[in-house]
Structures are given as structure tokens and as C-alpha cells.
Image (cartoon, rainbow, N blue to C red; front, side, top):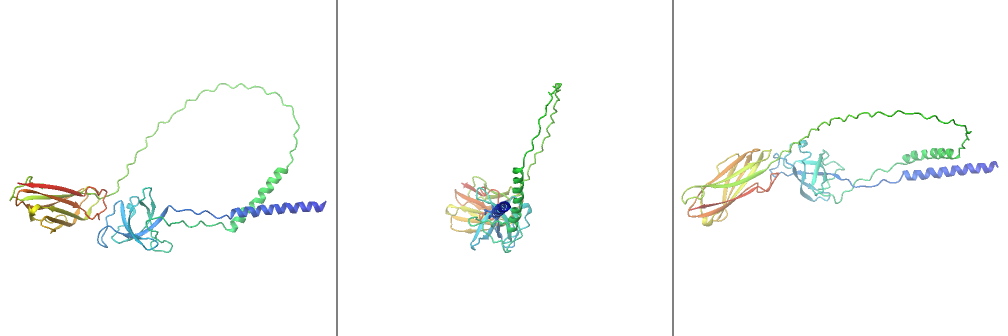
Length: 340
């Protein structure tokens, strides 16, 4: 009888050991691997000026980067969220940004990091085709053992509860309850608090540059042998000063008419010169100008009509799109003058 009882005890311990091993195996299962939505971009600043010159940063920052295969590419990053926290940047400065992809495919900067060029911060470039997040750390065997220790206690408690025998309670006679009369409740009026108006916070717009150009002439019509003035007006409707501005004014003159008299004089840093591609086509270029926020600059070219006719000219501001602007669609203007 005693031998049978001993075998039963051993079998119970074998079953308990199997349960501990099973729980340990579950605890040591490998973690899943996912993809990271945010990543780091490392590149040099390209703001369209000479190397070492200070850049004017708008909502977009243009970078030259190299991906993991060494291929260089030029792309734009939306820095509107972090622009106030950016330091003063110069052409060809090295910057490292934490970015993420927006639903429309653009890159948006969500932070700046000082880990440029350190081991483990390989720049993945401006695409996310080959990026994978690192595998999550797996639990150690000690973690699995600590989880397995609790299992026997829970099993023993459950076994003790299942084998407990309920003790019968003798029945007693219960006297009939005497009904209690409850007076009707008096309704308490509910006071509704007066809602407090929540002030609406108007976000402060980010600083920006927006250059526009207008083209006019006077008088109209002009008179043969009398001077005629062709005017270009450049306006900055933004909140930041625009520097290094370039204006190009192209004249189409049938049979070389009218004749050039004078170039625009120096104004706001602009220096002007002209080239004659053909007898018909003349190009006036003014460079190095500065246009203040909310300000305008006027450039005037003097002409002399030689015979009755007409000419057309087209003016463009920032023809190389080197200055980041909020709107690039208002940088060209055309004017036609007649003379008798």
C-alpha cells in the first residue's frame, strides 16, 4: 500500500516538472521583427549659393545625400516642424535629421541629431526600400525560469481548491421579514454649470520668402526718336529678406528696333549687364540683389525706337530656382510695347 502511494507522489512531481518546462519554452519564444517608420538622413546643405555662404531656410531644406551603396542624390526635406530649432546653416554644411515619409511621398523632418558620421548611423538615403528595424532582444533563460517558478504555485493552489470538501451548514428557521415603508424621495434639483469658453490659439505662421515680378513700359504708345523706358519691379511678399536675387529680362526686337540707350543703374545690390545673342534677341541680366521682406526693387532700361513697330520682352526673377519660395508660380512677367 505504501509503495503504491509513493509511486503516485512521484508521478505528480513528473507532471509538475513537465508543466514548468512547457512554460519556460513559451517564455523563450523569439520576438517579432517590425519596420521602423522613422529614420535618419545625413547630407550636405544645398541652398544655391557659394560654399560657406549663409543659407536662408524656408519650409523646405535641399540636401545632397549618399545612400548605403554610395549613390549621391539631391532631394528636399520638409523642415517646417523644426525650423525654429535649426542653427544657422551655410552652403555645404553637414546636417543629420530624423525624418519620416508622409502619405504624399515627401520627407518630413521631426528632429535633428548630432550623430553624423558615427558608427551605426549609416545613412539610408532618401528612400525606404531596403530599411529594416533591428531585431528585438530575445528573453534570456533567466527570464524564462522566473516565469516558470510561478507555475507550480498556481497549480498547487488550484489543486488544493479543487480537492477541498464543503462542510454542510445546518438549516435554520428564518422569521418572516417585517415590511419597511420607505417615504417617497424628494427630487434634488441638478445644477448645470455654465460652460467656460475655450480660447482659440492662432498658430504663428512660419517665416518665408516669396518673390514676384511685374513688367511695364512708358509711354504707350512710344514715339519714334523719343526715349522709352522698360521697367521691371521685383517684390518680396514674404517675411524673410531675399539675398542673391537674379533678374533676367529678354527683349525680342524685330530688325534690331528699338535701340538700347542705358542699362538699369545699381540698386539694392543689383549689378546689370547685357548680351546680344542675335540682332533680334537681347538679354539683360541683373545679379546680386537684395529684396527686403515686404519690399520692392525697380530696374529701368532705356530704349530708343528707330522706326514704327513693336517689341516684346519677358522678365524672370530667380530663373534658376535657387531661392526657396512659398510660391514659384509668379516669377515670370511679359510686356509688349508699340511705337509710332
